[in-house]
Image (cartoon, rainbow, N blue to C red; front, top):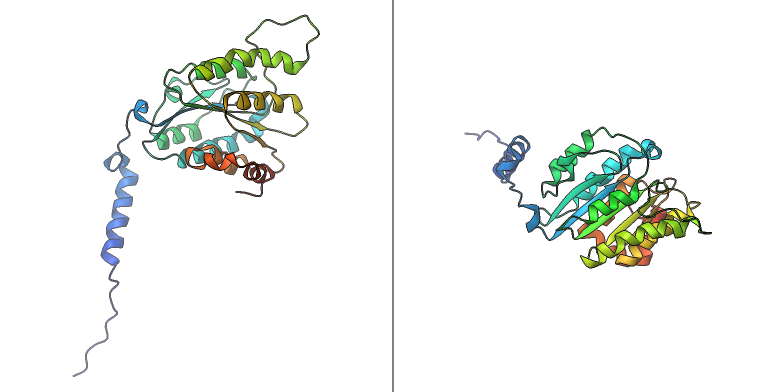
Length: 247
């Protein structure tokens, strides 16, 4: 008697089905598999100073995607983050949190109040966080605020900017908080680039220049995340990132 042909069963079918069910359950109830610790218990406690000025309006989508990708490269429950926007006040997003997936969703859906570039005041507020371990700031323009009085002396723009930076840098050094900075614009903005390098060089942070004609912010910002940051110690890697050759 002939035995009917039957297709061999996939020995891993049950495991695959269980994994798929777990993924579906996680999408519906993320808390069922992940519990986020208090931010104070995280090794990396970071603040991102996010430029939501009018000049960034064409690139806000890239900036959002870049920060969300940055979060994806942060180890769960080892990194906490809070957001400091230049113009948009959002107490919920300013709080340090280890729940970075939720913070990412908030950023993606956020409508920004585009305005000027009060960089110094925003960075000062961020660095005053008592449990901060690192700041990452990006901007595409010139600061429109100051933390020191205007001088009538023959002072160039960079020297004027540095006086405000010199209010923030000692606060960072006292707390051992490196400041990573990103300038998002053309190489013609020499003064602004020099200012951001001054922040990073003075606090043992990293500086990156993202020219929008070469670099997609949404892909490149992830290199500032904790698991990628050691790569930035290599000048050749930084140059590859800035040229758009490394993605």
